[in-house]
Length: 182
Image (cartoon, rainbow, N blue to C red; front, side, top):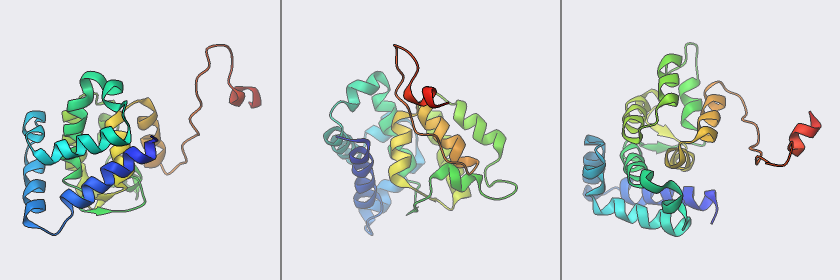
């Protein structure tokens, strides 16, 4: 399956489990927002529904992320619980709006350097109100699950209002087609 399927699965889970107008959804949101500790988050049965949905959308994801899988899953659930509304704009773009930007450059740069999933999740959740507790849920899910160099680069371009370059697959036997055009 594609990245779109992965993002769609996370988005659907967010809508059905966290944004439903029920006491159960409100309680789940409160519990997930309260504690970013992976064990606390993973003790919620609904988070395992998210894990199954992501596994169905991208069967190799768990193996691809390896030991980081559980922490990234917990981080994603923790952050999604704080997102109140969906918008087409990515989160970093919303943070970068204005002069000065809604989220300071220093705080943004600190977030980009973060490698620990729990610390990243707490930082993102705490900064969500600066974006009105809204963002592109599918994109946020993709980026938090991966949190690799490509995600960080996208966030930089989004924050500064630019358009990220198309990702080129690295080639081990010479320059890429993009290099040849330069």
